[in-house]
Length: 297
Length: 338
Image 1: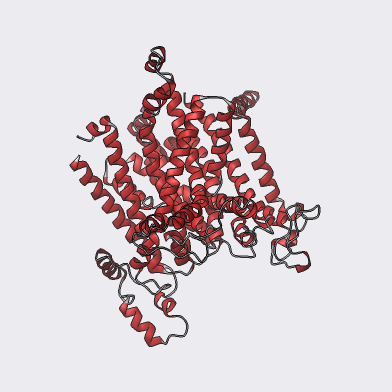
Image 2: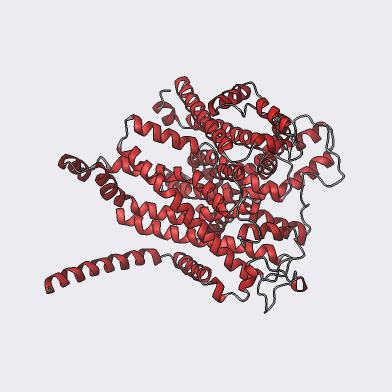
């Protein structure tokens, strides 16, 4: 019993040590820590939005024309928009939709991309690789934003279809990444040995090769949260994302832009909010890249 | 080299074929009747049926695709349901304005990016280097439409330093259309005032497009420069007393040309998609704004055509970039079988 207990604590100790080493590498650049703190604050604020925002009812179809177009003040930190809704409240609620969009896009596009990449890399030199990678090429033939806009336009414009459209244009990047890594991993001895012992293909692909790809994949996922949010904001800016009165950051920028320059706050604050969240994800992603880049050496 | 080009062309052709199939498939599986959408709610059932037959909508998917492909190969991309004109005609009308803007943006990002990269690499770890790093972080993280709105707000609406939206001021007549490029057309017409105005109007949208690419190109020049600065032959040149300016332009910048060209090729696709947003903000009457209008009005023929044209353009640019690199870099040329 005590031995087993010791073994478990030893395992946890090793994990803690690895974690603290990773944190050391991550925090060597203070910008990475700033990004992480901002990200945690945004997530917390978005999660608790109904409880911490001053006017939660303003997130919906609320109007109060007596307070429309007010400049930033103590009561309304970011001012109010053209129908009298508090811009600060709507920005915090907008973060909810941005983060939700990022998570759903990654959840939809990662599994197919990763699995196809694994298969194509493992069966390289066969027709399976040719088919998968050529299909990937087709999806990459136009810039992802153009494909996402086109697909979103053909579907009914709403939040879920925007997520779907971005995912359709995004999965090929994962299959490219995993394909390249699998290609080199499958030549290594541990994979060759497993093949000789008769391990099943799903076991080799998912339990042996995939865990070795997780570091770069995690880095890319973090950076891509930023890109997915950027694409989501772009789609809703054009009018192909969530429809009003949903408080989406891109939609708010588009709505407010009609009132520039007099009511600048209803555009500039949501616009800066978009920049802040993307910047935070990029900084954290760069930090993770530092962590995993040195682990390989 | 000829063999390589042929192989690349074949590859691009296959990819474009696949792309057309994909986009046509999506356009056909979405719910809703394109014929009904084209005619509106007031059309009678017979009229809709007639158009369905005309558009081959009553036939199976692959037959529809076959008819569409034959038409496309004859240069007919169908009729826009929105402008009621052939899509090809629309594209030819709007494309020059976008190309003009992209050309200008590329020029800005190339010149400014090289200078920034050169300075931050040469004065490494100075305050300028730090500033450039911050700028490039923010430049990459800012969506183009945000940059466009901020620039429009600050420089046009607050400071009145730059003109507002559009290609020319309201009331100024465009010169007779020859190429569709305003600054060429106005020069051909001998209207220098129009040329000047057109350039002024192009400045803000072009900068909005260029900012993200300035950051990227600058970073490449910077890292290449730092790499080369540590080489022995540079030290030898310095010992021999070669002037710094000559050193920079003749020896230090040259190795970064190839990665810069590579990135320009990749960036072209992003420049094109970013133009979608910048044109919307600046009400630029170009291809991208036409595309966004088509998308918002669910103009299926136009959407499919736009995606296809972008696919063709990107494929051509990539081919061009590869050939340029082979021309610049002898090792690549030899590897591909001279």
